[in-house]
Image (cartoon, rainbow, N blue to C red; front, side, top):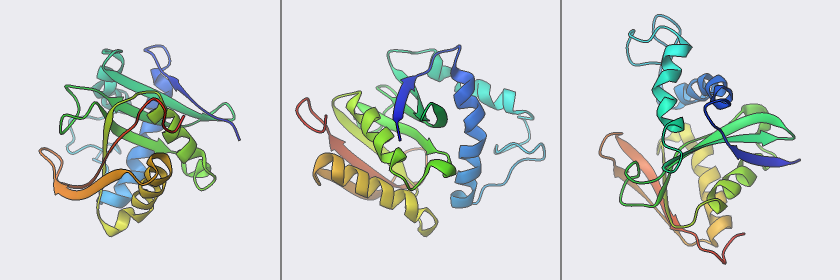
Length: 183
């Protein structure tokens, strides 16, 4: 299995846009979300199409030195994405923040997600933070991040459940990577 990551640009962003509804569908199981009356996972009925929803994410391709939209491929097939932010879009003064990380279900369980996460982490050096739902319904993601970060950092990471500024209670992971580590 060959796992690769690639930064997308405005011409290739449509691939992440195509995968995004699957991500929201998976999150609906964890957060209890339901689609609006138009079948789009949004808080209200103002957004009626996936095209309108995708415009919200155009910011990821408008700031190429600050926001990093990675496409994850397995054997050349789009398998997911990772959206990495830098200040001013990071919490707690971290250098990097994994804003979103997603692998399609058909690629889970075989090591593709961990391989992709490590490639993303190795692409940027500094202090990192990522957050996930702390609830029972999200045990798989919690376990994934604990295992992946333990392997990646040799156990040198912190985690806490805390209230976030704009996104409710989250399980927060923090760690630092460096030149001579994990590459």
